[in-house]
Length: 376
Image (cartoon, one colour):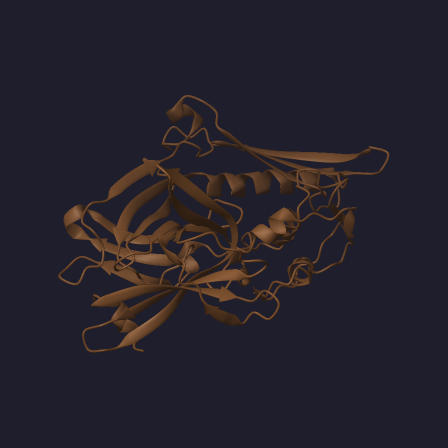
């Protein structure tokens, strides 16, 4: 099907819920007892996505998964069957009013399986291990399919995970998802996410300026978005002071620490300590020493790193919330928004989506862009 069809209005839509065998990954039949509901995607949550649907009657899904489809049809007879998500059904519930019962089903993205599981004894990743390869192996051992960008990053220190592991990465939680995301972060990757088929995505972090636009929302007779929007300009947590702490410690508790620091005190900067009248600090810790042949070189590196992080931490978030008909757009995609009569335009990155499983799949979407500090 020509992708341009998604820019046109659909003449008919319906939604299908399909049971997926956990053992084989095969679709084993439709679930007519499910209908309607919502799918929620949120980059700020650990499992990234969840869903809820109406249930005709109580139902035992056993270990199987639920996959949701949107079937669209256009005036010329062209059709498309699109997967919207694959979920773990977890919480059937029943509401009772005057003796009449209605059921609903809550479902979570497949990262919930990693969040629910912990290593019963500490598991150590040795120095020189490929961080992404180890994270991938943890997911695959859980029965998950992984799609990962290549990476040659290797760990420089031993890192321990699981119940009772509180050595050189004590800020990391005990779950397998905590382990996976810690290793991905070390390699410069985003936190793990899942695609519509339930596969785990391990993607290298890219600045939005490096990402190709996946969709363009344009004002006009074929516009797919509603005219009502909200726009915010948020600089609440934009830092004007950064502290970077490097440290290594042995089993006896002794070790070395180097602390780098940077301030923005420029009166011409609208985010500086002078302009805002207060200090807003962001801090970063690394369980290794900065490179350098001596203390002066290591200190210079730490101070330079703090200055670099200060520049990236000084961003004003421009946030737009809009509602649009279904478009093949995912969280973290970059979209262009061209709405001249509303005074909104630019390239934005998708942070959240709530898809309502009715009609043309109206989707409430929050997109954002970051503007670096303004001088003068």
